[in-house]
Length: 109
Image 1 (cartoon, one colour):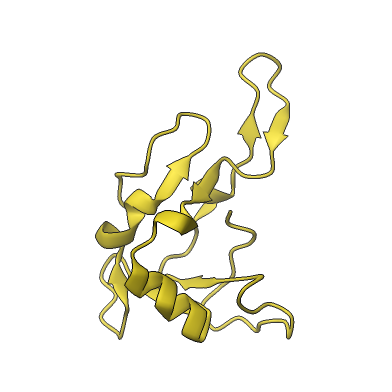
Image 2 (tube, rainbow, N blue to C red):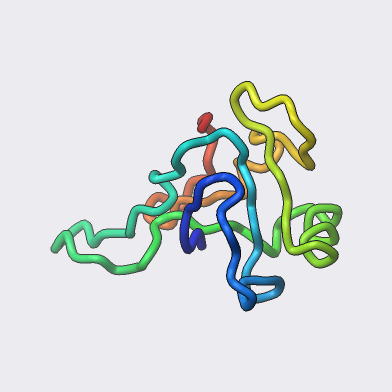
């Protein structure tokens, strides 16, 4: 799940590394707040999971998993970002699943 969002070039803690953490960098995107929302019970409105959205790690293509294992990071191109990147948002967004609905992401950032 997404644990935290940080500004571009924010410092990293020494323990924030693969395999406990994966860095998914989306340069130029101010917020991914949608993916930080908790999952709420439909009956009570109480938090049932820390995050509503999950990344389907086991389903990621082998190339993505290899890149994460080698470097602990991938860079995703979204919006008008023109720098170096590993994948586009369109290539990876369907690996983000809404736990509440069971549907994969299909929208833009």
